[in-house]
Each structure stands twice: as C-alpha cells, then as structure tokens.
Image (cartoon, rainbow, N blue to C red; front, side, top):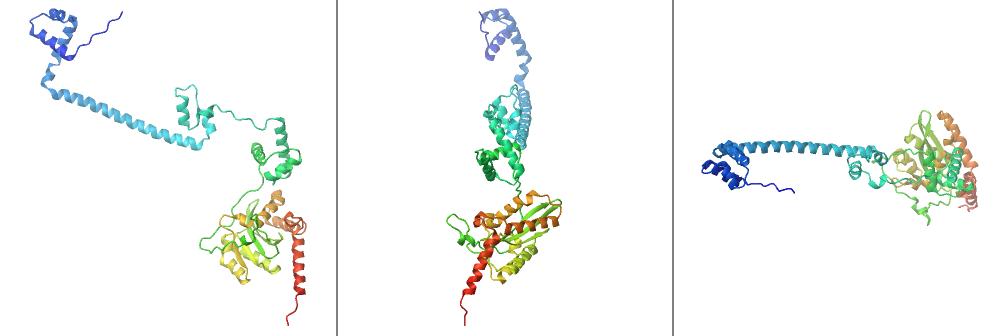
Length: 400
C-alpha cells in the first residue's frame, strides 16, 4: 500500500531551521520532535544558509526574475512571430492550391495514414469530407450507351455542323430516343463539338450616335419579327471567316421578308468602306427599303454610312446593346452559310473563298428551299412580290 508523500511549507521549514540554529536541541532531537528525517532537516539548514544573503539584497532577486521573465517574453514573441508567418504562408499556399488545382486533384492529396486528422486535412485542402467517400456513377459503359456513342460519332463525322437539336432528331431517326442534355454529355465524353466558333466582329464607338431599334412594331404575339413585304426591312451584319493565314470578313445585306441576299462583300479589313460599298451596291440594284437594321458597331454608326441612309430617306434601326437576337434574320443566314458551306471546306486563299461564297449565294437565292417562306426559294418569293407590285402600279389610274 503506497503512502502519500508529505509536503512542507516554506514557513514550516524556516521555523525548523531557526530552532536548529538556536542550538537548544540537537538536530536529531528537533527531527524527532517534528517527526522528520534528520537528513531533510540538514538539507533545509544548508539551503537556508546558502541563500540567507538574499534577505539583504532584494534587488538581486528581483533582477534575476526580471531577466528570466524578459528571456521568456522574448522567446514567446519570437515564437508568436514565427507562428504568424507560418499562418500567412499556409493561407497563401492553400489559396494558390485551390485556384490552380481542381478539387478532384486535391482529393488525391489526402493521406489516411498521416498524423493530421482527415477533418484537418480536408479543411486545409478546401474540400468537403463527403467527397472522399463519393464514387461517381460510370457513364456510357452499357451496351446501349456504347451503341449511342458510335451512332453519335458517325453522325458528327457526316454532319460536323449539327448542334444538339439536330443531333437529337438524327438519332431519333436511328432509333435512339434521347434528350439534348444526354447528347451534350455524350459529346463531351467522346470529345466532339459542333463546328461553330465565335468571334467578335463589330465594336461600338462611344462618341457615335446610337439609333433606336424600330422592329418592335413588327413583332407578333410570340415576340417574333414578321415583315410582310419585301424591301420593307433590310438587315446587315459582318462575320469573320478563317483562312489558312489569317481572317477575312464577310458582310451581307438580307431582305427580312424574303430572306434574299441582296448584296455581299468580302474584305481583309473590317472598316467603314466595307459597309458603305455594300450598301451602295444593294441600293444600285434594288428598290430602297423603309428600314435598315444593323448592330451598334462603329462601321454602321459612322457618319459616312449614316449619310447614305439619310440621303435615300431610309429609317435607321439598331439592335439593343449586346442583343444580336434583334437582328436574328442575318444571324440565321450566317449560321446557314457556315454550316452548309464554309465549315465543310478548307480555303487556302481569299479568291478561292470568294468563288465558293459566290456559288453558294447563287444556290441559296435560287435553289435552296426555306421553311420560313413556305418551302420556296428567296428569288421565287421576292420576284413574285415585286411582279405583283409592278402590276398594281400599272393598274393605277393616270393623274391628269
């Protein structure tokens, strides 16, 4: 059975030592009196005599403790500074790790055998602990899904300009009833995409006046712009085409009602001359429109372009800022010519491209059927409307 070790206060030790120094009793007698070991009493006496001088020089004691406190304080300050620096460095590295490395990659850094807990590791790596136990569902592994991928790849090879809408229809024709969301995932899985790159063309010029969008008056209940006669609204825009050694720019004017391309120009510079030459060419060959719609690009807000329209008494209409859909008629033509002609060829020179575009637009105007105009060609609709208009003019009574 163990016995608890006795402890004695400093006052008690001092009392015992003072009695020893008075020498009225021997050291052994005093030890017996207080039930102490003589060796302990002897040690207390020795300690008392060695430190008795401190009672007459308190400053030495105070200075000694002050020095110790200062050393400890400096040590603590140094440690606090190091801890602060390490914290800042840790936060910096964690932030960079998070921005440069995906959460999927950071998850691989977790070490289940490390001294740091999983909670602390996840906190430092900025990942949710639940992701450690998540196993993604394997997509496109079943026999049906593999057949779908093969069919999708074959359709894309034949029609690389098809987007998800047309791919869904094409796959339905082959017996695959799927939605656009699945098709998009499948395209990402096998690394294909529709050949429809984006490239910003016209840029607005802040000091030029921007005209109001006038085609709101032609919108139906479905918010679609419906123009009922030719030469009432013309629309124009500029798009880019990539050649082997750079870009060139294609500008065109379309009649909104008949979808007929009235004029087009190809240039290696995108300036006001491109748009003014195009406009003058169209006006020299066709009756002027009531409204001419463009975007807010500097080529169309330039004074030289605006002056031509004002000279002919044509009302100027411009899309809202960032609203290319306001000029949907010409935007759809760009999509058509790129999917059906430009993306299918690799043009080496501007002359080769010009020849190809010329042939396509002749075919587009005279042979290509448009569902928007009753599956007729633009030339059919335009010429019929113009002939009808001329007949009405001939029937008008002469003014005496």
